[in-house]
Amino acid sequence: MQYTEALREILGGNAIFDPVEKIPYLTDASAFKGKEPIAVAVPETVDEIRRLLAFCDSNKIFVVPRGGGTSLTGASIPLDNFVVLSMAKFNRIISISPADRYATVEPGVRLDDLNEKLAEINFIYPPDPASSMAATVGGSISTNAGGLRASMYGTTKEWILGLEVVLPNGNVMTTGGRVLKRSAGYDLTALFIGAEGTLGVITKAFVKIWPKPEATGRILAYYDAIEKVGLAIKNVKSVGITPLIAEFLDRITMDSLRKAKGMSFPETASYMLILDVASTNISINVDLERTAKILRDLGPIDLSITRDPEEMARIYEARKGAYSSLLKVRKSSSQKVIIGDVVVLASELPAALKLVAAKAEELGIMVALFGHISDGNIHANIFADPDEKQSMEKEEEFQKYLGKVALEHGGSVSAEHGIGIEKKSLLLDQFDFTESRDALDIMRKIKHAIDPNGIMNRGKIFD
Image 1: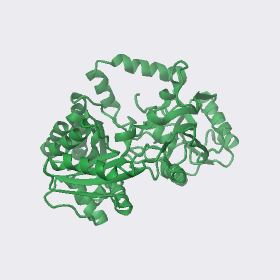
Image 2: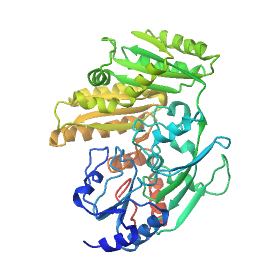
Image 3: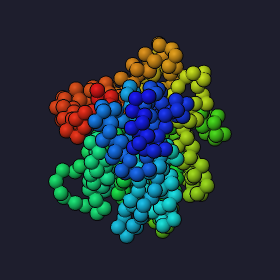
Image 4: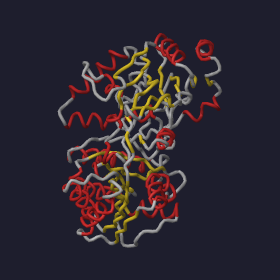
């Protein structure tokens, strides 16, 4: 096979050429399937990555960096003439400095593993996507992942101090640093956050860490209308309370959790609100009751408060497992659950959700709605069969409408899953809607300046 010997010389035994062993790298968590790559590189050193990229750049071979393979938009699958660059062996937590509030980690470190280590000193790394068991630091940086704790802590971009990056030509660059503030020209660190591997390969990250809240409690409230859920969050935030977590689930999702995990919910509830309050040991009970009163004023079907760690963990894991639970209510094994991910102004969420639900009914498709209600993030989980043309046409129509609703309600066509392959046309819709095609041209020029041969994750974000 062409290039095999050269790749063996660069990578030694850290390359996969066997077609069978390549199969796991053809897909990610999206509905897309890639093409067989030339090879799968699993390097152990920065020098191997440096030499690999320089070789690929010289020979016009495309490279797709891969973390945990949890992309929901096809960002980590190979297309024609690709080498997959797996960062699985870059999985070390290099150092932790609680006094300076940072940790130095390699990109293949899984988020749950990092937080397990930080828990030993009562700290956390706040970005917390539902896939944190498999998602990696590098992958979450590359998509600017958010997650359940984004309500209080924001998305990944708020927590990255600096990066070590191998550029497409094989040169190594460090951006930012380890201090919590700096003013030194252009913010090149930000350039690589959300770039989905289209500009270079992250080999090290300096990430901010934060003390765990002293005390937390959880409120579960059930309502018969999404307007009440939206008002509940609006009213809570209006009095100065910032939830640690604020999640909503619709009836389809609740029924899937009942089937998959044996959980029970009030039969007449249409929506479930999970709201966490963080406070001090002295104030937590007062703050929980203050928040609960605001929720009770909207007439919930049921409301409960818990501070029991086991119960809180059970509900937390159920929410993080909501997507996999939906697979239990598919109509056939060939049907997939394709996740739409948009964001609207939080105050616009009830109106947006009503439109989205009505569109699903108009198209006659099943769509489960859940998401991060405090920051207006909607995950529309669309049941569609890739083997049925009409089913996929309806899915595409719904996704386009979902993006339109997001833009008309002050938001974006992608909240935290990135663009990948799936949302390239929606990204164009967003630039057209905001009359910002110049921004896309600037993005293309940046891409060309850093990667003139276009080898890094070609075909993702834009063509």
